[in-house]
Amino acid sequence: MSSATVSRRACAGSLAALTLAAVAVGCGETTNEVPARPMAAASTPATPAVVTRVPAAQAATFALLRTAPEGLPPAIRQTLRTPIAGMNYALAQRIPAPAAGRYWLVPGRGYLCVVSQTPDTAGVGTVCSKTAQARTSGVATTSIPRAGQNAPVTGPRLIVGVAPDGARAVIVHTRGKIAVARVVDGLFVRRDDSVDPPDRITVRR
Image (cartoon, rainbow, N blue to C red; front, side, top):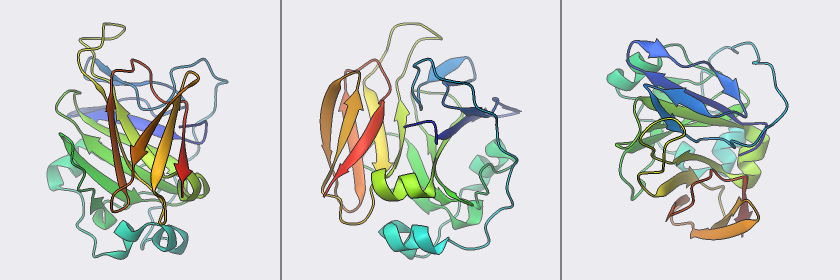
């Protein structure tokens, strides 16, 4: 939810450009997974080597990563193709969120990522936060369904994320307004009528 966030949306047969702090677009639809506000351009870092095990700092903060990995399904891997941020697809953990779609928490090298497949947006999305940021604020993906780019919103904003251990709730900050989502078993889901992606998410312990 800040300039430390890396986002990608992939479609079968093609990959959208990897962006930093921008709106990811894929398959003719828009999904707002990072702020749409004007921000300074940032260069894309070189793709780091894939991690071979869950980084200790991530496992120490997120209970979901201390269970046996399930891995991304083959079809999702095929769509995403080359990992970004050092993600290891075999170490992915399914996020059992009470929300439409499928979500996975995937460790990376210096990043923690959420891979998502939602019914209202095309393709497969990836959003990653630096480990230090994720340990403080969690990591989440945001879907705002639209009929097309710059078209009216067709459904509720949906935020699905994983909070650090000990979090009781998260506070979603959007254009000066706040919304609260309760954390249950380390997970949080927020549905509302906002047409904007969050500016940031903070944790309440």
